[in-house]
Length: 368
Image 1 (tube, rainbow, N blue to C red):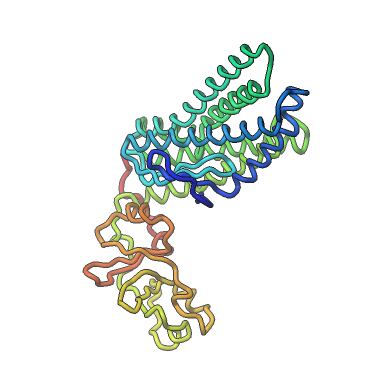
Image 2: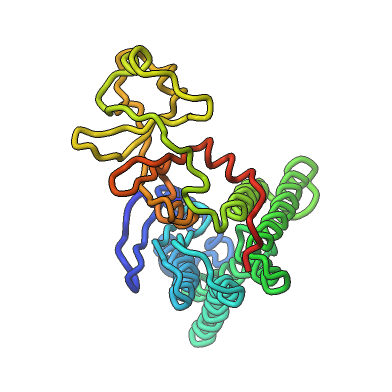
């Protein structure tokens, strides 16, 4: 999840907001001011809208505190924290490295729900204190007690035992401790996430279609997101397991074809010799001889005659042959391919086809 715009930094960690949070804020504020607060406290002194805006602001601050707890504990254990983004379904802390140990993974996972539960207790306590001092319920006390309840729900929900929820990270850490296989632990947590997602989808649909149970359409939507995310996480864990310990030279296709970035697709089809059957990626050279991009050979075959290779290019990073594949991909997760260079000599390329072949290979060894 990438942010739409940045808010700044807290403890050196960039904080961003996705545009979907604006929709959530509008719906939450409208629901509180137009329905919940008037029904709980009819004829209250003060503005329902002001109370609703305060509640929404503190709610998002609570989500941010949840994610900051993850990030700060992760950084304590030496993990790189890229940024935090608030979005439709809460927040995402993007970590640039993996947990160094099962204990670290467990504590990082528990930090967020722990903060939410602590905030829930604090909001409940302050809300009750305000109500006691005022001698009756007020908009402020109702807002604080609502925030207490929502933080407790947030903390408990995130502890459900399946990835990508925090509870899934807890499951992964415990399996890692028991079996000493990090990747298999991640796969197990992802499978548990599919079960959690399926249950939530079923609860939502049962209520929607038959009026049975406590689920809602939102429950089904959240379940669908968890299910899809868990499938993606299992796929990523399996790929990481297959690539653990493999160096770039073990995965690359050697001696790939190359061409100037400024030539047209028709010129490549006419003038360049046809590539070998095992070659799928064309490496592009810029005017100064540098390499920054590649293009799939199949794309060149099907491109309009007037399209230049630069128009068709996908970003690439340059890596030495002895680098570990996972380290290279972790540093540049959005690249289309990896160009393997040594002393300015082109040695090979890793594109989508090479990655698929590597991911399908037998793992070298379990990761402890």
